[in-house]
Length: 314
Image (tube, rainbow, N blue to C red):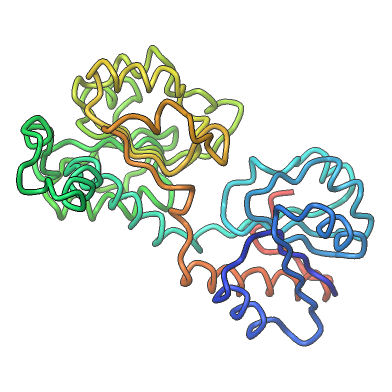
């Protein structure tokens, strides 16, 4: 059996794949920028190990031996599910493998925005750290005593909420499904936006959630609030977010994701001092990748043995 990983994998991840792959599985790693090699390798591949490069109908059509698209992660918005279903190609994800990493990164971004860590880092490196801009000093804040609103209450939010509580924050959540086990207080989305000093997004990207934080909802956010997004960029109207950050309606934003990725170097969000950014790496740790390899190889074994696929989406 042949599996193709379309990803610019680190040496450590490649080593993990080589060490953990069963003898009957040939794992080929292709840099996502190398489209010609990817197309050639996919002609006889039964499994595509998918990270972020879109799996389009054209990719599926050109991969005549393909039987499984295994998402390395949770979100499947980058896969043409209808085309996969039409061609009889199974699609699976792996919930839980990156939860710890995303929880930690979300907290790191939140604190970096509140404490303006990137700005102080830059000023220290340039020799101006001990004479900071006094406006920057006034703009910092503590998490303790603030209200954090979690939009969505899946695996990440449910693990993040107790951590926030332990640090002294009051935590709210908004979700369509009642969560009696939650340590946070339930609110409607609009009420959460109006009460929260920090709003953190934890939703999948669907037709229903695209543009969820539009201009009207951003205007409903509490003046001086911080927005954190480690979910999907298209949940937010980025033009409206830029305006809110420039006007001072929002104190800061901390973003790991963007509507278009890679984000353009001239994107207006990148020019703002009150924005902290990372390149969609909240999930990316060696520990996540090791857990992901285990799930992926188990599903390859199941595919080979004719057994039910774990976490099948299509």
